Image 1 (spheres, rainbow, N blue to C red):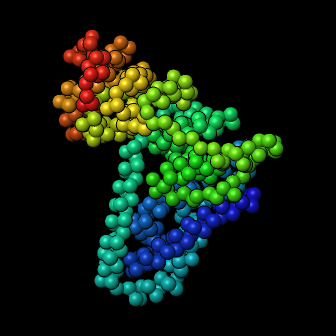
Image 2 (image 1 turned 135 degrees about the vertical axis):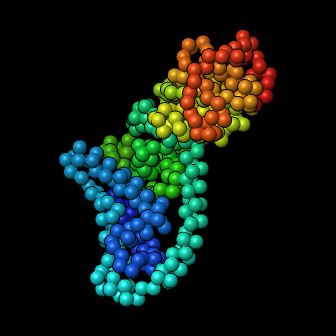
Image 3 (image 1 turned 180 degrees about the horizontal axis):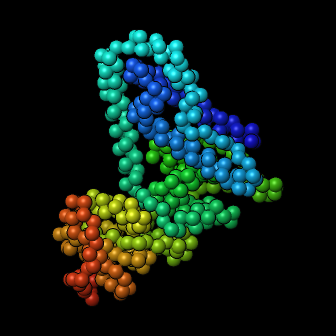
Length: 396
């Protein structure tokens, strides 16, 4: 294993062991009188659930790297152990499972003290766990929790040697819109190996938003894997400092849709036609359909950085039309708000020309956890003048 890589990996393991060592010291008084080894792990997972999960994620990341290395070199490099095995190397854990400590603990055990310690620690930890849960939930609300069919192509496009840093910026924005093991593992890879500072820090903060506790890489330790002198000079001295800020407006998105590969490859199973006033209910529908593996287009998730419907212009309409064209079907979320929405009427009328399925689900049903889609046989929305309503109307 190269010296720098070995140092970084070993540092990761030491950090994990140190973290668990400190956490176990807070848990030792919570153990039952005649506790078993698994009781320690149960407490650790209960009072420090996100910390445990972060280790599981890192374990899968390094195991995936090993599987790749074995496929091309015939041998592994990291061999990271499962969290339960790593725990066995933690000094405090070894002390807790020793027969001497067990005997002493059993003799000094006091149930009232144990219950008091349980109450105190949970009071301290519960608010922190809930705060992290809220943070992660908010991060997930900005994503779709599924893996789109084109994700491998998108990642492959990012990894091509001739893909510019500018294009990688657009691709990374698209990847941030999906939350799945494959996407998270890719962001771990970027955080670990991406030479460009801007892209690497985007990956770092994205992982942080889900509380995965990534380690920030120092630029001076980033490795350049090429023997070509000219390429090496570029990757070492120029590419790391390249920076690009995406213009966040409908015109920019329209241009990318017409010209960029990361936009042209997109396909959606459903376009959600709804009123923005019903967004909280629509989120429940999106989560349900994601759970079935369906990729949904919803403007305030998929194009939130570019698309501002209150800033109406020709580009806004072009983007909406393109997303409708990329969708296999449309779901109309029926409510008083959506029936009166000029945008919904626009979307339904435009989609009508494709002769693709149009489904309907009532807002009240979704609120009650009922997600049955019905074919929309009532064509109440048909209007030959539908485009003009959007151009002169307001956001609904």
